[in-house]
Length: 509
Ligand code: ACM
Image 1 (cartoon, rainbow, N blue to C red):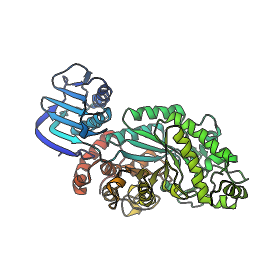
Image 2 (image 1 turned 180 degrees about the horizontal axis):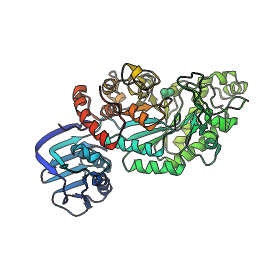
Image 3 (image 1 turned 45 degrees about the vertical axis):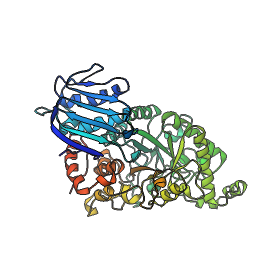
Image 4 (image 1 turned 135 degrees about the horizontal axis):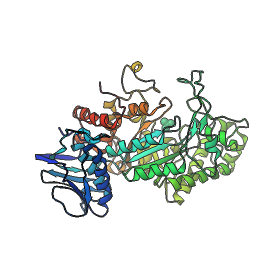
């Protein structure tokens, strides 16, 4: 069985095998060379082979070629394996990279190992593959704010995304419970905001663990992550939350909040009333933050959150009420819309695009906004119908912080919900009622790893995998090709690769 995950668009087996051996060379030139180098590099350790990369023609070679081939679009590839040689062709380096990922999966699982494997024949079955992704947004979101994750774990996720031909890693960098990105102009955001005194046990039990928790990424570290990811065709989308989920920032700079009393970085979970005020100075502060964010992250999309912003403090604040009148924003929802529009205009002026959770629809959507629909599909449907791009990220199929198996008592403690593998697999990001024109606005989908109850890399991987494998197939494979039973068979083989990589996935039932 060819256990390629995600399943390619078309795959035709042929006779015989190609064998990687001491004479095998990778042949590439120009923009194809870095991709050939990367694929060869990943294979050298487990195979122990030289796998030199050469611009000269070689016999028995794996050849990477960029050439015009409209059917393949920006990310598709062709892969032809025969006993006498292997050809990967694509219009782009990204397409070649994905062809390279399929090539790795045609080899025995040991090809994913971190040490030289002995006694393995490095054979690939002959096959013809033509493969083009269904969606251009294929991603995961890591909440590194509720619980900080080491840089090495983010890098591991980049590798795991790339292995599944996923191309977007959304980093949720700021929260009530922690601010995780160095901002040079406002050092207290991390000096104060990156650390909480302790953390509540369970779901706001009233008991605390007594352990200081925190951490942040320097801009230098984040640039390293961005560079590593870019080489693997993964875009890092940064999220800076506003106007809600702001308590850590307000703890660092009290003038950003609505109250006189000092706040600490939050130690509980849930929706927090302490939101940013709506002063021009606060807007400017956050735009200055975004300036530094844009220097670190080349991503076209910059996420500004926008979800779960309770309006109680704005309702109670005479100053906010005065500003609602002055600005003619009608009410607090109008004020939130005003706030997001300031960011939309600002980001657009810098050549970027604003992305926000579906609450940014309330009070009127900013003209350039792209919507990430999490409270079901409704927000995404409304936005797409109004001509906006959307990413579908609904709770009931893409929230990987929810339980993945029953009985839930046997699973590690989670936030609730129930999102089993099959449900993820059968998700269709395009609502059946959509016209072709509306469907074009669905950029794709991503899985969410909120981390209130996920404190370690092992637990994070357990929640992510294998559900992310199912989502990769949602995002890549044509609907008509998908079948959960067939996928389950391939997945069992795929998990052997995870055993080699060292992924702490949840075992299949
Ligand atoms: C969210 O889950 N609050 C986007």
